[in-house]
Image: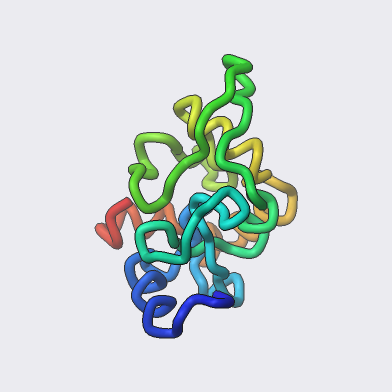
Length: 147
């Protein structure tokens, strides 16, 4: 998690349940998580715990220094999902087959689009996770970490 002290990195990973704050991919299935500055350092964000979460490489790289994106439904600018403060289930849902994340709100839809959360590669991974029974959707149903 570059430039973040190891003790803080471990604390944030544990708080996140070792999952990406956006697509919920678990660290053990994607090979690691990266530091996520919710407010990017380039926009004045700090490396304090309140501004950190973890994200998979694909979500983190797609987000870059964005804090807002256009909601494709309303065409208005919306703040991106904040995995530290926002409730995932209020802004997103899983498709019936578990391969797509559906934005339920302007914030959710803007985040899905901006972070390319349903790109082809991630949908392939999710299909495999569903088949193996290790998909985040199953964890939610079985009383795993609350989202």
